[in-house]
Amino acid sequence: MARRLTLYILLGMVLGIVVGFLVRSFVPADSVEFEYWLKGFGTLATIFLNLIKMLVAPLILGTLIAGIAHMGDSSALGRIGTRAIAWFVLASLISISLGLIMVNLLEPGAGLHLAVGAHSSAEVGEVKKLDMFEFIEHIFPKNVIQAMAENNVLQILVFALFAGVGLSALGEKGKPLVRGAEALAELMLQITGYVMRLAPFAVFGALAKVVAQYGLGILATYAELLTEFYISLVLLWVILLGVGALFLGRRIVQLVRYVREPLLIAFSTASSEAAMPKLFEQLDRFGVPRRISGFVLPLGYSFNLDGSMMYASFATIFIAQAYDIDIPIATQILILLTLMVSSKGIAAVPRASLVVITATLAMFDLPVEGVALVFAIDHFLDMGRTATNVVGNAVATSVITKWEGMLEEPDPAFEERPHAPAHTAHHGARGLELQEDMVADKRTPPADA
Image (cartoon, rainbow, N blue to C red; front, top):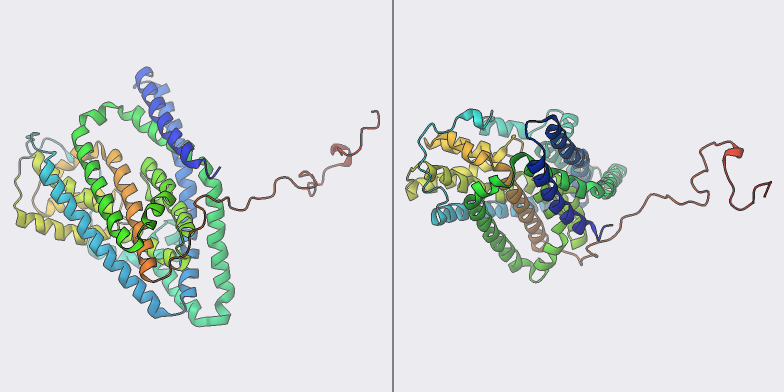
């Protein structure tokens, strides 16, 4: 199953597009049947995403606590954290700069000649205001149970830091809790294996719903923007993987092979959370110790959103081009610096990238209603930038592990995890307290035989 999962996911993507197109073509859009089709498709994706979200908080908590406790030296934690932040800042600068360069070269918004007021804020919906001070306060949890219930990665990270360092200080007294944290993380990865069997169905449902709802026509309408943005993402992948190759050498190709399933899941569901448990598992197999990945990966999910940051710079200038607003290079550099800061506070904010774009437009007196331009195809753009976020974090975690001199030899990319017993000597009858005449013993023939 593990070896065939990639094929099943790709098959789900293709079938999702085909079935979505057929529903769009043959079922009237204003009918009850059409709504049922959309709800059915959406249910497949929602069930999978809910199950994945169920795993995220305990997985991060167990992995982080065990990893930090095993470091044994708090200075190592500080060194790894410093190197991770340095990498994240460099990756952010590259992502945002490349977005600005590509949107100026390709000019996807030129020729639209929109007038201010051509779109209304109602088309975008309510977008939560980005407030850096609120974000900083929001990092520190007042209730760790609530933080886990809300899957707040940053707050879980803060609590796990304190817990891991505290258990390290306790020594022998804290070892039972450390073993418990390790067992919790392993249990979550085991459950991930079960949940991943639903991934092809979730991919099918997610894409079928989008295509049925919007049709393939929306892709043609925004073809230029989509094409040029994805070209920019490919260039960003090349740069990130190229920089990673300076540290990892030929193993960078191996890394791409190991993380292809998390990539497909992230792309098709447009959800970084959906890919996180599988990414942890594949980085384990690639040779990244859990004490490194358990700390760097959750940190990267909050501060290293390469695809989202590139999209923010690309979309901001695209909107200005659409309204025929010329932005001087000096102002674009200020936009770059603004995005460098504001993009670090988007992890826990709904519609994160749209929030950053809206805040940046307002700050530089650009038409905020222009967000409606990209909102219509935000899902398709989100698929690419989410997959890029996964690539960026996989490369960052692997490079920092190599930097620390802790990258181990890889295990096979696809390896079955332990299975729950299903075929016992008692054929599942033992312990069920069935009446003797209800259990057929295959070893003795019936009395009337």
